[in-house]
Length: 145
Image (cartoon, rainbow, N blue to C red; front, side, top):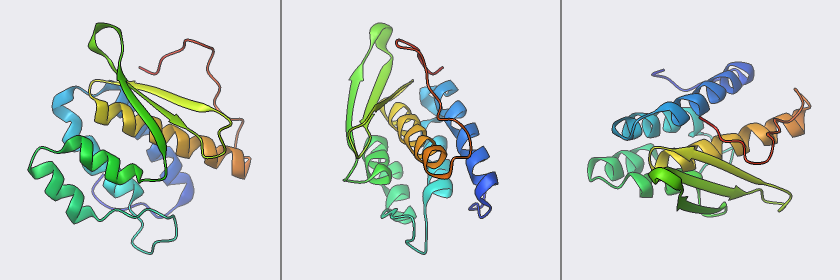
C-alpha cells in the first residue's frame, strides 16, 4: 500500500486489513503501521475532518515520538484512554462521540492499540451510518488479536 485510497469499498476493505495488521504487529512494526494509517486516513481535501499533516507525522516518527504521531492522527476530539493489561499488553479505549459505546483494542504498543481502536471506531461508524452490514459486536471480554 503506497498510495491514498479513493474507492469507498476498497478503503473499507483496507481499513479492515489494517485493523488486523495492527493487532498482529510487533512493536518493531509500529512506525510502518503509522505510515500506513497516514495513507489510509489523511484527507488532503479536508472533507473527512482529518486535521493532521503527513509531514508532521513523519517528523514525529523520525525523532521517536510514535505515540504523539498516533495522537495527532486520532485528533484532539476523540476521548481515549491507554492502559497496560495483563502480561504487558497495551490497551486502548475510545468512547464514541455520542457516548453510546466504547471501543477497546489491544496491541504490542500503545500506538498500535490506539490505531486499532480508532480504525474500529471508524468502521463501526461507517457500518452504522451506511447500513452496509450489521455493526461488529463482540461478546464481553473478547479481545482483538
